[in-house]
Image (cartoon, rainbow, N blue to C red; front, side, top):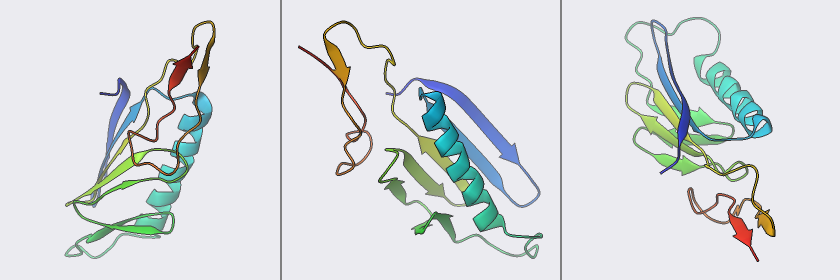
Length: 124
């Protein structure tokens, strides 16, 4: 299981967001933060929805997820969960950023779902 280093919930009058990030590099965390902010702007839009409005889907970039659906982002190897009540949870790869001698980190395997797409440390 990934080592979670951040678990943050943001609440507003209409939305409840929960994010869980695994141990990621600063650059990966920045990319995911941009993705999440873009998602928030795209879903929330400008102004508040009507009080009786129910969110039926989550939208991540060009992908629409139904409530209860799980999706692996094809570039960042991040698993995204869409739940009823508009709760989104992200899980990313956990990896020691400094592999030992005679070891290397494999690239993200974009043809696999999370967690199998995560980079791995391979030693000779």
